[in-house]
Image (cartoon, rainbow, N blue to C red):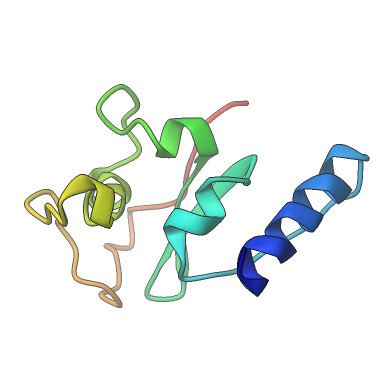
Length: 103
């Protein structure tokens, strides 16, 4: 187990004890394995917020094409970027606020 994985195991244990943790990372695959919730940022703005289980199942939960595209470009999803509608770092339209899923 590498250092990042060990840290996340420790973070998950702390969260399970009732502690609140905020982990910011570009390693979507690693973080989604232990996260309760996911906030997708693009261009410095939150564009989608959801339970992690919904992020990992974009075909059954609609949080926008960008969030679904981020999931689909992971290695286990064959780097399929066909649904990535916004380029990384591109600012979303002003009327595109954070999609907050209940949970």
